[in-house]
View 1 (tube, one colour):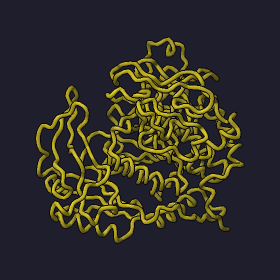
View 2 (cartoon, helix red, strand yellow; view 1 turned 135 degrees about the vertical axis):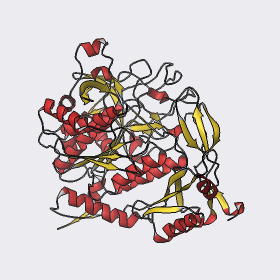
View 3 (cartoon, helix red, strand yellow; view 1 turned 180 degrees about the vertical axis):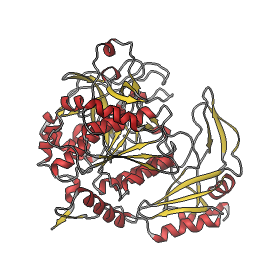
View 4 (cartoon, one colour; view 1 turned 60 degrees about the horizontal axis):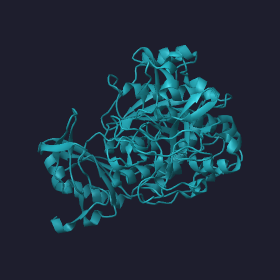
Length: 542
C-alpha cells in the first residue's frame, strides 16, 4: 500500500497532553495493542421480542442477543480489517462481531507503519507521567474508509479521572457529623422500599484500583444488611488490583450502589485507563450475556476537549447499543465545575456524561431536606454545561437549554440531567482499607441512582432502559418528581485544577449545574407506571 492509498481517519487527530514533550521514539519492539471499532451492520434499533413471564436475567440475555444480531458488524467488514492487519504483520487477537471490535497486537514499529503514525515517548513537565503517544491523524487504506469508526490504543495516555473527594476532617461540617450512609440519602430521596433489586445486575466501570472483601464485609455489617454478590470481570488484561488511590472510587461505587439495591448483583469491569480500555470495558458490559447488567454506572470521565472525536463517537455508538438493549447508563458529570480541570479558561462539558444516550449526574449539597448546588469554592464543584460535540436531543428541547457561556454562544446537549448529594462535607460514609471515611463527588451520584434504577426495574417488572427521555417527559407533566435546586452555581476560582472559569447558575426548572434536580424515587416510580419507556417498545409474546 502506498501513501496515495491512505486516508485520514476522521476525528483521530491527537495532540500532546498539556505540558508534555516528546523525549524519544517508542521502542521498536514494544508491544502495542489496539482496538479497531467497525461500523454497525444496522443503525436501526431492532424490534425486540421478549417472552412474557421470563425471569429478568433471561429477558436481558434475550434482548442482547437480538440487538447484537441486528447491529453486529458484518463478516465482510471484519474480514477487510483482519486482512489489512495480517498484511501488515499484525496479530489478530480477537474478533467480536457483536461488539464490532477487532483486537490487534504488534510491535510499535509494525503498528506505526500500518496506521501511518510515529509513536513516541512523552513526559509531562512537573508530573511523574510518561506515556506512549502520537500526533496527527491515523491513516487507513481507502477500502476501510467508512468501515472503521475508530482505532484506539496507539496512544496509551491516561484518558480519564475518577470524580471523588475525601472530606476534610477539620471542617466544621465534618465535625458536626453531617455525613450520611447511602441508605440515609436514599431515604431522604424517598427511594422505593418495597424492592431490594433482586434479579437485577448493576455494572460498575473501573479504570484502576480494586476492592477487598474485608472492606465490603465491614461496610455492610455496619449497615446491618447482607453483603452483595460482587463479580470482578477483567478487560484488556486488567483485574481487581487494590493498592492505589483508585481503591476509594471502587469501594464507593460498590458500597453505594449495593446499599441502595442490596440484592442486586454487582459486576465490576476493570480495564486500563486508556481510550481503548474505557471503550472496551463499556462494550464488554453492554454485550455481556452471562452477567447481563441492566444498568451501568460510570464515575470516570474528562472534558470533551481531552478526547479524540473518534473515541467519543466509538463510545457513543456503544451507548446506542445499550439503549437498544434496554440498559440504562448513568455517568458522573465531573467534579471541577464549569472548567472541568482544563487549562484554557473556557467552560467544558464532561464526557461520557455529555453523550445523549446516558443520564448525566450532577452534584448538590444536601442538608436534611434542603439542597443547593455543590460548590466548595476551591475548585471542587459539580460539573455541568453545554456540549461542544453533541446537539441538543429532541427530548431535551423542552428544557430550553441555554447557549454556552463561551464566546460564540454554541447550543448543544445540556448537562447534567439530574443531581444528587455530592458535597464532601455532607458526603457518604464508606469503608476503605479497613477504615471508615467520608467522601463526596459526582462519583457517588451515578452509583446512587444506578441503585434506584435497579429498584425501578424490579418494581416495574421491565427495564427503564434509556431513561433520560422519560425523565424530561415526566418533568413536563409532574415536576414534583424532582427536587428543584434553584440556588448556587458551578463557577470556579483559580486553583490547582485550572484557571478561574465562570459557569452556570441554578434557577427554577432545568439548569446547567443541577439539571432537573434530585429525584424523588417513589414519585418517579409512580410516574413511570403511565409513561411508555423506550424498552417497552419491544413486542412481547407469551
